Length: 275
Image 1 (cartoon, rainbow, N blue to C red):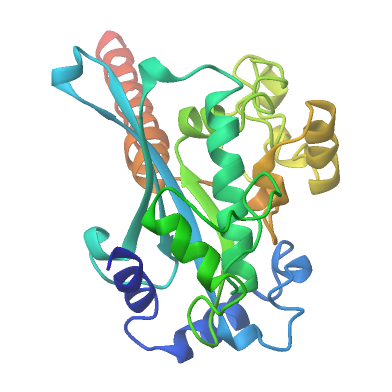
Image 2 (spheres, rainbow, N blue to C red):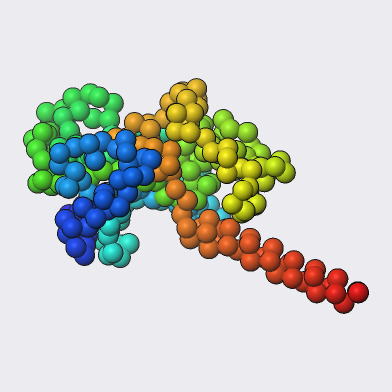
């Protein structure tokens, strides 16, 4: 029932018109130009989907956090409860850096690859054939229906990963950590400490704006770090790793900018008083 509601609400409120409008809007983007969905003759049936991750503090866990990962339609106007398909919830005390999320993302990448092709798989995420006899009802159902269409003529194509930087640090480990810790992330050279690349410089001619890492360089870093399952999702592009506006916008950059503005105004006021 959850997956059916997610599929239905992914097309609200304008159905297939929303799909066409989305792809026509992004077709000139760097990532869209190489996306396999737009290269398909069935591109009008490729529903754009995103993944979203975040941490949630739980008091009953004595200050511990839960990592929550979901999949949702990029076009949906429905509520989170119906438009997001929960993928996994994980207590952070169980996480082993470099292992736990890598294994989970292997399963998610396999699932999103199947969704992109629109067909129920005949192989599991380890590329092993699905067993004919399974110990659970879901496994038996998968074996029986392998090769069938997932949702009629529809395909579901990856167009983004949303989350704050700490979340992406977890999911993309060790790619993020292979980059010098003084830089803001693995996608560019914006820095916390180097004056000419300072990440808090929002001017149009800021030095860090000219040092954004290309997709090819990003993928080379991925290979050097031993690869990552997320990059195997059809249509993956480093530009599709996106910040969650609520965290990094309203609670991050905007809050920082407002705070620095207020501070500067106070310092100006104090200097005028002393004059």
